[in-house]
Amino acid sequence: MRYRRIANTQIDVSEIGFGVWTLASGWWGERSDAEAITLLRQAFDRGVTFFDTADTYGDGRGERLLAQAFPGADRADIVIGTKCGYDWESRSEARRAGQREAPQRFDVPFLERALVASLERLGCEHIDLWQLHNARAAQLEDDALWTFLERVQREGRVRAVGVALGPAIGWREEGEYALRERPGATVQMIYNALELDPGRALIEAARMHGRSLLVRVPHASGMLEGHYTTDTTFAEGDHRRHRPERWLGEGLQKIEQLRFLTDGTGRTLGQAALRFVLHEPCVVSALPNVYELAQLDEFVGASDCSDLSADDVARVVALYERNYGLPREAAEAATS
Image (cartoon, rainbow, N blue to C red; front, side):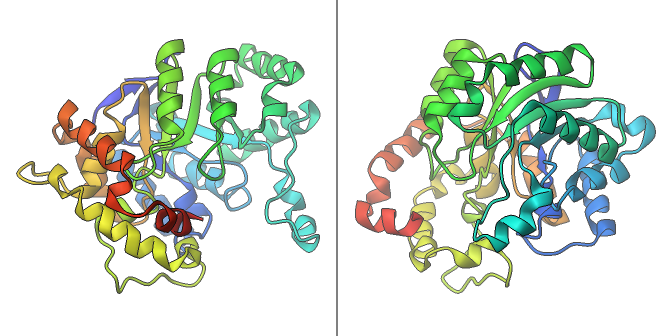
């Protein structure tokens, strides 16, 4: 495993991280606590040291799983990123009112309570990276919020703060503002070989301001793992089941044009997709969706694979620019 340092901190993270939402949320299938804890420990045994979760994942389950997987002395050997900003305890009321998301709250009293609760669930005295979860422009511009974040860092309860953009692709203005104007250590974004924008603009901003990025969905919801076929179906509860039908067909046509990344290299497509994301030095960790051991072994193995060449990366960008030769209107329908 290779490791990278988050800019302007003393925090080193594994370049292949572990997004705990796949185990805690149920969006990728249900797993028992014992199964989840075993997979987290197996990741650690293979060199993964960065684990990213959120207080809202499984209504605190993601944080509790990490506490059970890494008790006592083991805690010093891992880096935990978690997130705040959703009043998920009010989610049932929000759903009755027809809202899909839990209400967001970034007022200081709420965040103070959220921090205390996260520390209790994690069973530790500090959070390594505390991220504002899907924060909008209004929150990023709130000086009182950032004064609070600076205070909890001085108190030692948080080592570094960041911003997680989302939930969907986009959020360029928020990301550029955070990288340019705010002292947060990281911005987390969606970025992969099929979805380069607005990630490219945020990479440029991170380079310009000497900041670090985290990348989630590096496999485009599994498409870039290279295992889907026209007959692939998804289980009830799996969020991919609700994708437009064209998403699968269009995606399969695109990934066939990326097979050059594996020819004669010993890399799988899933590993090549991770090396594409990690080609950018300002990307300190990629967070693939991990939910079984064979998949974990493949993704961790990406750290032992050769880097993509500049020509490889340029070829991917050229394919993206012409939408892999597919009609633009079809692509828009497939991702809407």
